[in-house]
Image (cartoon, rainbow, N blue to C red; front, side):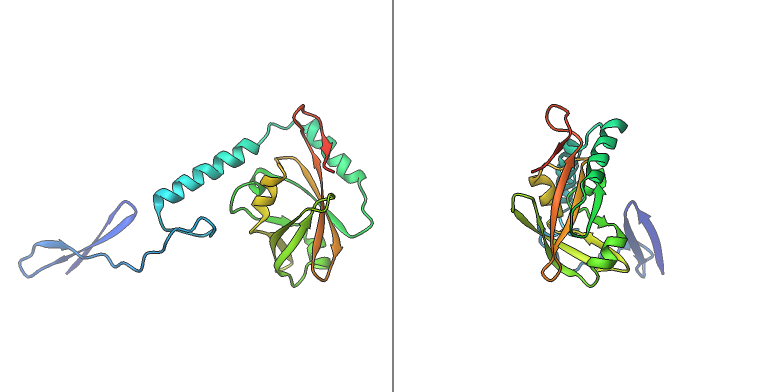
Length: 194
């Protein structure tokens, strides 16, 4: 006879022996995986995961800003006034785009025309020529940045409300030039990154 009991998150099966006493059934365990901070989807090491989530939250919340509607509108209008010669799209950064392990979707109309079939790393390039490798995946009419995007946002001090203009420079080995229109600079001034 088996009796199933649930104990918090763990399910425990009890079995009866011939004497009627209940003994816990040994838990089945697989091979333990080592925790790798470079892998986004690791479930090993619960304490390490909790620490990492806290660090990621603190990092993203430090870049989360109180942005007024007026400041956001100024950044958006400045980005709209910027019209590159090459195909481009604009993205207003949300807090969810700034966490470790986050993904950022590009507008589907831009993705369908210029990024269909991409499933590898592309380059993001600032106007000064510095480049970052970012994983870009196109699937089902959507393109998203994943691995490398978080590092790009950190190293370029991107925050909530900033507007990124992604301009297609090369379509064979994809390079997107990124022009950033910032909501706030240290003195609260909007600034276009050079």
